[in-house]
Length: 383
Image 1 (cartoon, rainbow, N blue to C red):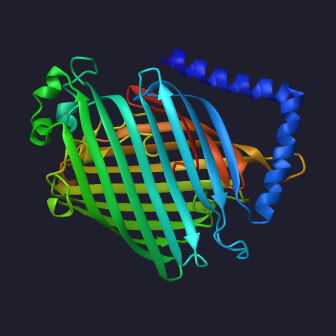
Image 2 (cartoon, rainbow, N blue to C red):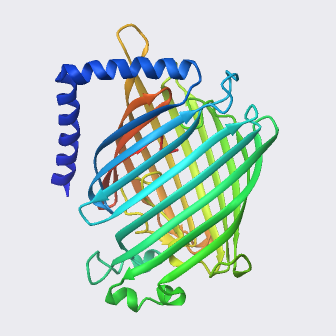
């Protein structure tokens, strides 16, 4: 696995080196940079495209490609944030492929926000069961944990600002999981058999948050607190009746200068009712405890915290460069409910940042967990 990770990193650095030595590409990039600066300054739309290798524990070695399209909903408003539409796709050596996007838009002097999260994937995944006691009994393997599934999520959300920094809103959550292939252990798992291979869920979602971050996709300073609730049921056309509650607190402190930030996040997700296995709280993935297989640890309740240092380098003239590094430390847990929490798992990692548009970075993160690691490639910060 570590050879694959090293190969991915060396491949990425090789591409950068070759491009840097090629005068034609260097000239094109300089013109592209001038065009971008002009478009951003005038409030016009701009599209950035990038591609590169990666490695995640759930997908193996992969090639990802993506773009981020940014624009202003009102070019005359110098204070409103640029709206963004990132789009990422990947294909991996395990035969997995997927696409995801997280549209964030700002309207009416930021009185109105409209967001859409969309994901689709077909993957050879792993199911270790529910709860620490079951998870510890299984070793990853074709006959124990491996299964193939198809999944999609669409979550539109609209929020309104009644007073400064306070937003209230609502939306929907449409999600579907279809298991295409299982293994003998999974076929005997009581939790899996309770819900079966095909689940379609529909929920009404409500949110209340306080948001004083300077820039949503890459904050240097500010606070964010969000309470969200989702109510799912057959009365909306779904297959299962359950509720999900989320608490998300983040703080960003600028240290001495812009581009040098300490970011902290505390996240909790709590469920009640008949929650299907793919909708349980799961640790891991590219935005939370990076380095763990997403879904290795799952249960009705999940908590994690992260402390991350983000540092953008300065050029010789004192201006900020396009390159930066991050490092983080965190931990998480799962349990049936908050009163039954017994064990926490560690997480730490390092990352590289490259600014493709003002305050919008491509990130490459290498995360390490308990007997697990992963290299992640994506747009915008993890939180």
